[in-house]
Length: 402
Image 1 (cartoon, rainbow, N blue to C red):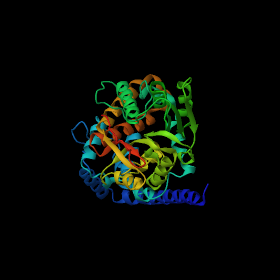
Image 2: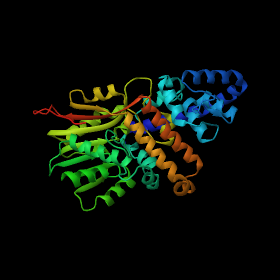
Image 3: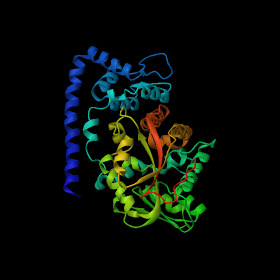
Image 4: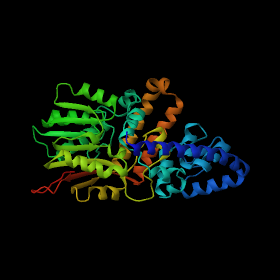
């Protein structure tokens, strides 16, 4: 581990330690001036489109008044989400509430106080790269097997002509294959290969060999099982360690774990590994305005450790003088539909297959994760990009499909 990485980790512990002291002191101050604090919180919620104790289906119904307002005053959106997990408030329509709030484009007003400090740290160093695998992707395949559908694709489906989740995920995999312009015998690298179903699809239907790179032990194990008999190899490794040539490279839903301080390194690694006449396809969530922060403290603690949603201009800066954009395709609304289907599957499986193992607090955590994510895409605060890149422009040009 580099000295800079050690110092980075120490700084994070100091920041959270100091905040815990601040939080304790602020709790006493807020209790002392509770009526004023309550009004200030209500004004903030008004500006971010939240109806507190209103009659709308999406209105927030407060169940534990003192804790609700104290948490919101001190930790803002972190306290708001955690309060839902601890049954301090409820609503009949989580997704509707989230969408309405995102549409105001004012959600920065209620971000956790540490958001800006943590955003400026490099939380995606090599030594920390494995945290999201251990903290999210390896929590249990049982959740993903019931939620994601037949193809175990943990990324946005393509709903142009699809009527079901499985159809949308198959369409997405085939869309990627066609955009890559694959030919039998080609060697493909998949950075952040998930459960391996895309790699299986490419090898089975397009006659290519695939190397899948992952930081998740469970996903790698699953991929090895479903790809037996096909020319697919899985490697547990950080993307920064890759150093061999491929005809095509693809990365789906992994870039959100790279962090903006490492974007240039990521694109340099991909360029190093791609043949001169090769094609690289990147599928990533992104935001295209500054009303949404890339880093979220609640998501960091409970869902995606060290996650960071890229700002589209940061991607543009990172590829400058490295890549030519051959094609850009935004189908962000399809992610809201995909998330809705995941939520339906999760709810259907919860009582009999998951509740005993994970408990009700986990259920509320997962529900707010899926619902808030739907709100981001339904409100168009987040986009879903497929970006096709070449090193120096393909001589024959590039004809994309939709």
